[in-house]
Image (tube, rainbow, N blue to C red; front, side, top):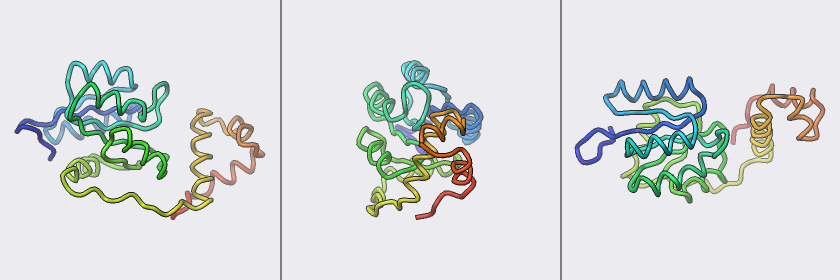
Length: 181
């Protein structure tokens, strides 16, 4: 368990997915940790001012201000805060950018509270180096398609137009599993 100065750590969970956020907050509270949730960066900054969190779990992609932009804001307002960035769209470039902006770890969804707490426990240990190999072209394409689809709020026709693909071609690509490295 993560503890600072002998007191339980105060966690701030920032994710626009209400179901995931509430499950994670309840799971952390079930482990006798103080945890609060926020659905946006603005809500998170207001909550952080009143609760002064020791640790934050921040989703990368949210409407409005992104998790990447929230990381340095939280770090500036809450000195010493430990931040883990979560995403469903993992890539080496965003992992590096998250760490550069102040996060100490970057995890890809799906995951559970135990995996998140394990990431905070590894804080004192030597951080695992980020993989240096370049992702495959298929992996980069899959990530780009997923980001575009997310930006289009799941509208396949709109995403196909933005990607310059026929709608059926996009549907075939989406039916495939993500490429493994």
